[in-house]
Amino acid sequence: MNKGIIVFAYNSRKVDYSLLAIISGGLAKKHLGLPISLITDQSTVDWMNENNTIEKANEIFSSIILTERPQSENYRNLSDGNEIDNIPFINANRYSVWDLTPYDRTLLIDSDYLIFSNRLRAYLDSTDDFMIGKSMTDLGGERVGTLDRYVSETGPNLYWATNVIFNKNKDTKLFFNLVDYIKENYNYYSELFRFYPRPYRNDISFSIAKHTLDGFTTNTENSLPSIPTITDKDILVDVSVDGKLTFLINQGNNDFVAISVKNQDVHIMNKQSIIRNKENLLRLI
Amino acid sequence: MDERLTKALDFAKYKQSLNLQRKNLREKIDGKLTYGHNGGIFKIDRSLINFVELLINKERTINVPLLDSNENPILIENLVAFRDEILDRYMSSVYEYAEQYEKIKKSRSVEKLLEL
Image (cartoon, rainbow over all chains, first blue to last red; front, side, top):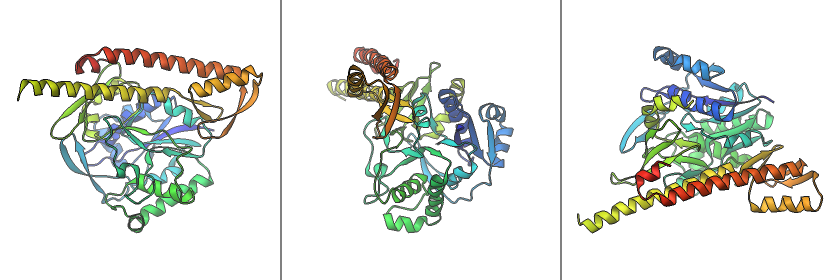
């Protein structure tokens, strides 16, 4: 069975997702010792050519798989510390990973998930057909609210599609087809489970699909570990040569607390702060 | 601002960083104690080590099924080698935990905490 990692990246006007994918892909490949492929579109590849990052991309990715750019009117508010910007969010074809992956067993990661340990390797070597992050852990404290745990105040458990592992077989095909169906009928599901339908979130579609296929029950067994997360209101301020990441944790009212993390996987939702530290992060690959 | 309050707030900030560093260290060690074997996923803890040792003492060492963290039965072909591996991983993780924990305890400023 061949195993590998997949990351998606479609650049928007405001976020260089291709650069995020190069950083997260390079770290994942280094720490998990598996090949990685990028799913993207021609305009993002053109951007990489113009910005001379294509060479690095070719070095890291064993294949660059081109798709049509997903049509999206999806926008979301993304913070960079105290600054907030409304950015295009091109995430509508994540379900297609089943068809696009060249691997029998795939780890799908978000491009803002940076891997600094081999923790997920044990899960890649396990035999479960499908696993998804069961929850998120706030590395900046206890700022996990109801909507970080559940699809809505009355809805099912929220799983985190930041990390997904699946075998390519007919059972998992059923799952990803259902994710596609939920995406197409997102307004209906938002009424049914009473969540706000904008912006479209893969976490929610994946959660409803899992909830449905688990027989409308919550089943966090056979899940991936909780996702260690730094929110977009926090700021990555430094990356040292030995791989230590220093963050300012936003306490509100322009008040920050400093922490550092080393040899630990981390989901950094503040994408611009990853990009500001690109040189040092690329040195760690 | 009153100097007493300024000092108290500075100390509060240090304590916040200290507590977060401790919490994240536990999270990191928890990750190191996850062990994949023969398709199963085991959380290495004292209970698993003791149970495996008990089985070995009872001379059940070859092709022993164990329940992993997800309650799935996983066949362990060589339980002695399995025991040695989990004990090694447990001890190296706990040594690292102890070392880092001690450093955190001795760090009396945010700057020192961030050096770890």
